[in-house]
Image 1 (cartoon, one colour):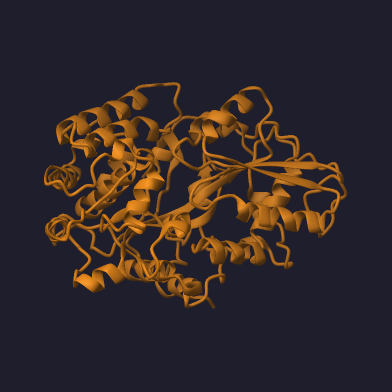
Image 2: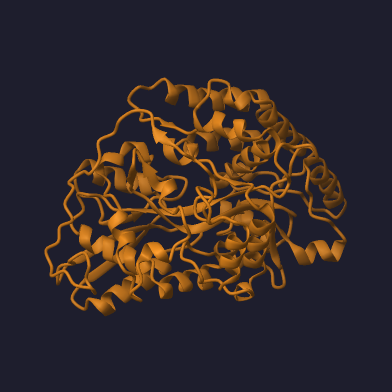
Length: 469
């Protein structure tokens, strides 16, 4: 049994909705109806067999579009090569994209969507806009993997829940993502610094960093909302589940919750004290991240667990990247410091009107094989939803080992939130957060403008709403 599997099973994540891939009892259902099924055809034009459960046609092509971000696209190409090996006349084509919405929305509108796509990144497609055009994926996890075992029996429980809308399982989230505050353990050891558990401790650390000619934080223009994630996570820990539910359900005063305001106040204080590397709103996010991983101009960086792989070519030798949970505002927070934002990410979807639905399902089935999932964990230094693929030494990654420690320490205090993905708010929020981190707006402005974004969506009857309970 892998360290990751031991960690989840030891904490009792195998009970109920608190599953490893979901990590939160969302219980969400669509408040308004949405038709499902799209074309509804499995397009089985080939012979069905144990090795070809979906009937992939000979000489067919599989068109897969993958978000080319922190995890790259080669892990899907690895699975595509396995498909080619097992179906010699089939041609999988894997294309990378950094603008999923911009590239695929026109294809959906024109009736020519790809066969499989990874709906990730700052420019992902709002699921509410394409829900009716997506295939139900239960047939994929009901099938046997390449090793001959039912896929559903190889996955952490609950993997279908975050991708299920109106009772329809349309998004298979492949990578298990831990959201944390990352730092260089070697730099901290060298200076005798202790990773902060509260925002006041973080601000104190900012003063110590300044004495060494360093900053506390850094950000890049495309990733300013990483600090929104940090703020929301801290606020949920401080104020409890009502904070999460207020945001998820687009509550009229969600952003004015005292817990959110207290966290925003602490971030504003860090901005005012000059604890951020300046100019982030005009800096490419990878260049900004390199200021942390390579130049070590900053001490802390909030991100998902893709960060180590994303920056592996721009990280100083001996950096010892390590993650810690988001800080709380006080020691009397409703959730403990160890509480964690974690969820399965990289949602793969199959349009019903794709030319090769069967081929898309076969590629996704192959990605869920042990070989493909282990390859992802080893090369991306992050686990997938497939159990038993991460060894105890984390393939030599301090970041991967720290992920297991964080999840283990969180116990059942693990949660996620989906408003940004479901309603596609990231683009508008990016503008607000870049201005805020630049010191060009204050907490009151950030609050009111964020609320306006929520109010507009809530009052738009054409937008499918998700009620999270």
